[in-house]
Length: 282
Length: 162
Image (tube, rainbow over all chains, first blue to last red; front, side):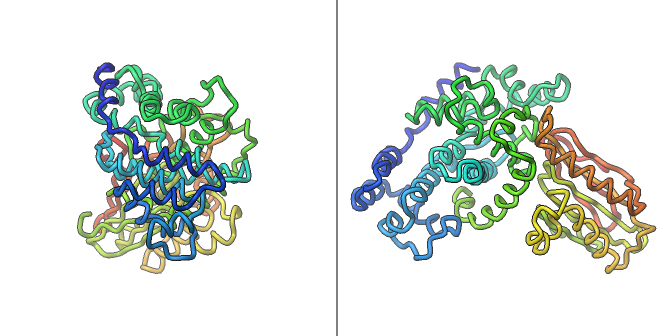
């Protein structure tokens, strides 16, 4: 089965080139608005999605955004990257079935919630937001989109292992299917030419402790954000909360329980503002 | 959605004495559902709280008391009294409070939520009639106002009566 799964990565559509191009342009602080606008406009589907979400209260822009030109000017660099990633990743979700006993929309809502939570944690720990972290968080479960087709037939075996043998969901997936959804997601991100920090964060989002190169916080923050959303019931998948805790990661960043509880309150406030982002996948 | 389903969201509660109503709350992770029912008055209530203690954020607590066990639970009981329920007749059940596997010292929101509800009930002489708590899966809870029957469905599992 594992060969079939790995082959199916190659059948995925390419990740929209627009996103990588615009991200490159935006890395330069004095990017030309006209250049960015023309690249985005070239991809009508993404442009349309950006317009759908850019007036979301989540981005907090006062002016009404009516065109891509407005979006590039008023959203500003960081929000623009977030809107662009959300607009393009949502298109990939919309075309697939999630499997794992959940609807695609539910997996999408979980992904957006983890992305928002990752920014809340980054603000708390690093005093700033991080668009690379946002992208990694938004894509962390992308492996489930491919695995979904295959996991249905194996789901009984996976449940049985979780119930009887004290397996985590990840361990049960590995044992039954031969690969877990995190590792598969990492491979998809490689196929889509995302930088190493993003594919590592996806591949290790349940076990950041296993990642030996510790220079970046991204995998740990994705992991914590993910677990918090699972605890709040924002998932709907068959894995529930059956994942290994990551106490050491929490300690490493000096996060206390009250930090996390307060972050949860912020998350629910932001989710209310992020309606447009949540509903872009039906 | 089935007719008569009244959805109770996270940090929310609902009470009813309409026989056709079914109070439903989805996706209880580490959060807890408190389910109360008076079989004589046929009044039922369901609370889905998120965190144990409202001292975390007083402003939030004022806006959304059902978010916290310490103020959400009294609110649930009082709202059912207002519909004719009486404390001595109430059948009380709880569900939820799931945890991440071997979560050590941190990530104990599920356990903290359970401790909170037990403490409040102990102080107020309330017996917990039945519970489905802990473990590491999500739960959906339904309470039928007509007869007070309560059903729990776990992620991937069958519904069972609590």
